[in-house]
Length: 251
Length: 350
Figure: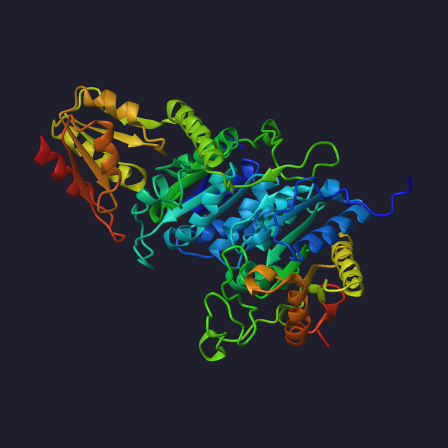
């Protein structure tokens, strides 16, 4: 019998706990596939952050460390400095990376820390039940912005790739999504490149993946993808914001 | 390296860590521990090690967490306000059973406090460094030589018991210079770390370094197991120096910088014919309960002297089970008590 499709070997057999329609599962697969294709599982260490994806340490079959909220890139820095030949990645949500972990993110990036960052942006805090995230859109209704995000009191969303691309330590900053087969393929290549960059010593690589949260957005999985296309992508344009090696300045 | 060299306390702490096999130091500037980080910045690149100035104390301690998880000896140093920020990472390291060494060169508090020597972080170090049920090893040196010796011990015991260890020094010890004999370089390979997240090399199941357990019974049993380990630590690792205790009526209990003052006061009391002695805890956790209990059989009065408003005094009272009166004398905010002041307190008690 010919095998036409199978789970990447870098995913364990543990059942994923994510809600129906959540795109974490696809992104997990893409990360695992990149590790498998590059043949680096034995020397890869992942860092799980606080949020919905915290238990990804049970899903990836490489060695894993669970970091305090926001500190994944500091933990990754310690792991990488201790064993530079290992491949280190973080898997972080928007609250972790762009709110409580902003300092760790900006400084790991500006140091040109040779790590791979998978940033899952679903514009909401999922694990705690749908509060406003740093990336929640203007007027977006969340548990803590029940009248919609008022930019006059709650401020504006953070565009992470645009911000980080100004830092010389960054090799790759690219925003992708997984709403269609075409975009999943783009995301797959981008994630693999972010790992390849680390192997080649190019510096800090971040892939931001626009993701859905049907549960906390209060939408069906299909409508959630539609909401992502209609609302998130216009605010967070897909594309490559920086692609080079650390030390390069944004043109 | 058996020759004596004159070293500043902060620099001696750094060199001792290097001799103990530490090649990964993550810091953030703060007075009065500055020389330690500066020394590391000078030495580490020449040894092929890592000196990294983090963006914050939070980042620094979590870099230590990462390096410790990778299985290497890692250290960070700070002073009181900075150590408050490190509490998060220390709690996570305790919950993940990670060994590391944290230096606190204490200064006055609370808040930004001052930059002069203090011992007001005793409670923080021994009881409340972070959230949750946990302890860390706490060593309290009183000389530059002892700083050197205890750093090596802290790394060894941290590895052995898989828990963070702290050197609780203060601005006086950090800034003073004394002659020291540096130890021979340590053999770190003796401490294997099969649990480390160092890459499984396709040879074993993946290791997970983690402190999250959502099932209450699972979390409880892990914490209970950890506390069984703490009992072993309590049985094996209590350290204290006894000075003129055997025939003493009044025993001063003091650690670190204040024990140096207390020792002078005890000597002056003896010159006056007063039967005074000194118990100097070297480990603050585990607290040297056994030494105090033994002394309580014949001592008539204990006097705890601290550079704080009275923190260790609680542990002294608990150790002697209030069978013997325990009084307290302290100065705080960066003020160092004088031997004369302490002698006056001893004289009141005799």
